[in-house]
Length: 540
Image (cartoon, rainbow, N blue to C red):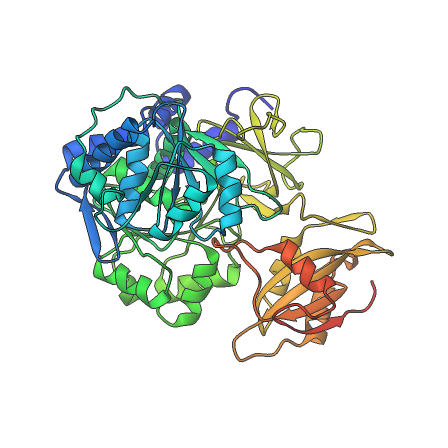
């Protein structure tokens, strides 16, 4: 792979931008400054403009900047600064946003913690983060003190130990000199296969990611961006980053409900919606989607997990808008996307966003021909430098990050299609099976609302292709019909040898299927929760 962007990468950037931008100029524009510096710059220009609404509370850009800098003064007095870390463990709220920017203004990095974690899980992440302080929901304060943190600030209320009390009493911290390469986030991976790892993301990394989508998706100050995603995850937090970079308004629904989300879209005349496939599935089945209700919405995105083509088609039919599918990771931010202007191809994640480079390689790190499945590797200003406490074994020569995701590139036009994870690839009878390829066939069949494919240990095959099927509402899955359909659409080695009907696929909070949980259910001989019926197909 070449050290400079390939012709296909440059064509991808041009397709997103619509204008030819020199490589060096683009990179400088994407990664300069800091997140809190961008928020302050926007507040200086538009102090009275609404910035964020969450539930019944709203805050302007000016008030957000002032409150964050007052919190930063308190944090600095309590040891926060360059090279330190502060845990942020709370649900979505205006105070969460103040705390997030306040930590960054202090010079510390934010250790983003899922508020749903148990006390044991929280203790493990705090151990990895090694923070000097924490900001959290009130019910977390005692847990964090028991772990050993003495400086713990509570969200909610107005007592001296609360964020509101601190903001009321503290001076406004002066702005710090921009340090784009300082760590902004300790972002913990989802941990679907083991203990989460802390990715170290700099201000440059995070800003390059959000500025890339701002350019590619035409996000402007006039936009109203809505989502119902958790702010402690990169996907949800990117909505806030778009707000502070462009000066647009963000309306973040505290928890997802189809009716509530659609009502918010109507009420605030939203123009941009961020969502994940699990949300799109529920929105389609809820009956809440319509052209009338979505009003001024011009862009609706989908990411963090694969979107079923059938769901994409249903959204298009109901609303007139096809979800724009994109791809990114905690470690890289947004890196691939369908074009805003051009074909939004269902089941594809498009091509490299401005500044990002993507390639598909074999097990030796050599780029494969288009149309051949291989591992996705990435580089660019949004790609992190490594995990806390680990080396750089995840990188190839030339700074290419190994994602572990498998994809193929369409020979005709360069669109990327993700087919699975390298760790999820099934080797049966010595042949490779990519779960997503089988799932796409099964998901098109009558009576099947969702499908997931895993490999189970097999003395005969090494691994046995096993399919989990979720019935459509009010329908029953005809296993014989499904098996026949698989025989007509898939090569013999790809066909599931066993079908299991389950009420619901286990997923994490962003809708990613927990395949390890499915393996446990299958090996539990049908006694796992939600498993209703199973049937073996004929040997192939």
